[in-house]
Image (cartoon, rainbow, N blue to C red; front, side, top):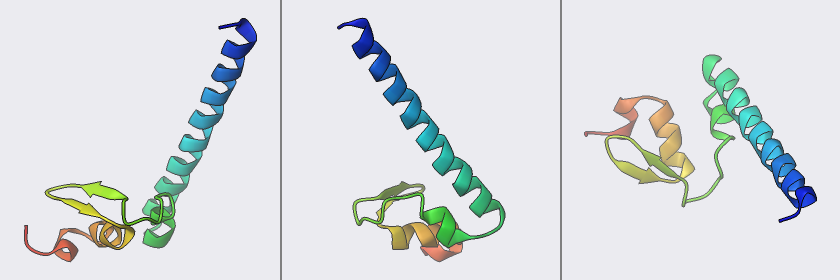
Length: 76
């Protein structure tokens, strides 16, 4: 691999890191103000999105329940 290819990969990696940090920062801000919809916007709107807690669930609707607390999940 040539040095210019390595430099391009490093730049792409940094760009990805910055994008992930931006999403996490926005989610933190949304969570702290109690805005579940804004918090959930950081996740892909897909039935394949998986949330892992006491049990494994899929989909954003389930994630919204998780954000509202354990009682929203139903019995453990």
